[in-house]
Length: 103
Image 1 (cartoon, helix red, strand yellow):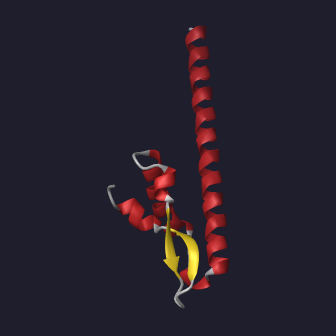
Image 2: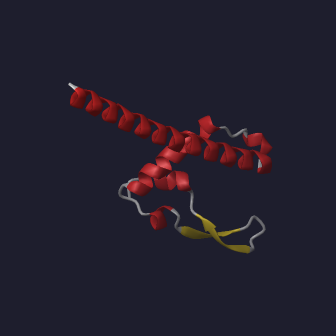
């Protein structure tokens, strides 16, 4: 009977530790999203970025990176001229179009 009790205590303790670890990871991700949102809002106040608006984009990006698309493919660059016709060099390709197409 004592062995079963100790096993139950050990299992419960392990589950609590795992739950705390996952909670810490989620808090860290939420804090990172908040910092990203604050950074975007400080440079583009009219955008009104929040963790709610960032979460779907981050999820899509993470899913795309972790599945068939490589990071290099998603972040490929293209040449784009400026409005006045001068070449600005290389600018990042649109992430949204890369994420929604099945290349």
